[in-house]
Every structure is written in structure tokens, then in C-alpha cells.
Image (cartoon, rainbow, N blue to C red):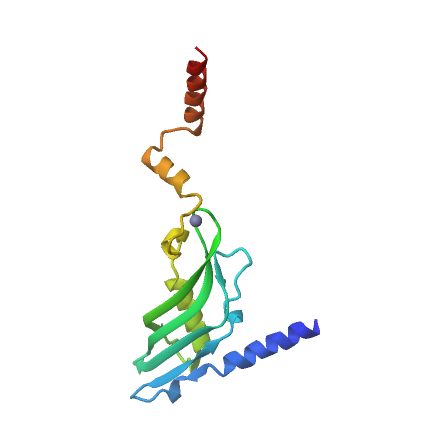
Length: 173
Ligand SMILES: [Zn+2]
């Protein structure tokens, strides 16, 4: 129990240092960069996205009316689950022209840049990726099955088996 409390406290402190007050954003903008701990993601064990470590960001922040805009880059290492074979493969995220914006609610005085970075990683990471599109020289172990099905969706898996039986019988004659 005790260690859980400590961890929660550390995480809060870390993120609090990433809190940005609207009043602190000058007309010429603000530059913030840093590293955010893997704990910001807080995803389920079986989520198709698994962060492998802390993520880095660089943000130029402007305030335009009631909108905070961000531009810069995001980097981080992840494991992504292949949508075809369900294996996890390494993926290095490098979003070099990251842009985002945040609509401020009435009376909102600050925001957590960690929240913005988290949301944008989850949005930008490829959804339903295929492992051989992510990893060079890899062949998805289940790709053949899917291609067979896609080229002839009407073919039942049993049909080939039947043909083999007849083929085998032919040999006997
Ligand atoms: Zn795969």
C-alpha cells in the first residue's frame, strides 16, 4: 500500500511541473520541452498500444483567443499489436511535425501538457497496424491466411482439404 502511495505522489509531482498557466503564455509564445514518464499512459495490460518507456516532446505554445495551439515534435518508443497476427512489435514514434490545439473552457486557468501529449500519441500512433508494415523485412506470420481469404472470400477452409482427399485417392488408382 505504502509504495503505491509514493508512486502516485511522484507521478502527480512530475505532472504538476508540466502544468502551464494560461496567464504565463506571452504573445510571442512559449517553448516547453521535456520527458514524460510512461505512467501518463495508464493503459490496460491488453491494450494494442504498449509504451516502452518515457516519451519526449518539444512544443511551441501560443494562445489565440480561447485556443491554445501547439507545434513541435513528439518522440517515443512503443510496442504495437499487429492487427493480423496479434503479436507485439517495436515501433519508434517520431512525429516531427506535430500540431495540436486545445479549446479552453470558460474560466480555465491552466492545463497539463502531459495530457495533451498523451492524447496526441494515442491519436497519431497507427491504428490496426500490420507488423510487416512497421518492421522492415518482416513477414506477418498470419498474412498468407488473410490474403487467401481476401482473394476468394467464398472459399471455405474445408474445400482445399476435400481436394487433397481426392488427390490422394487419384494416386491410389
Ligand atoms: Zn502480424
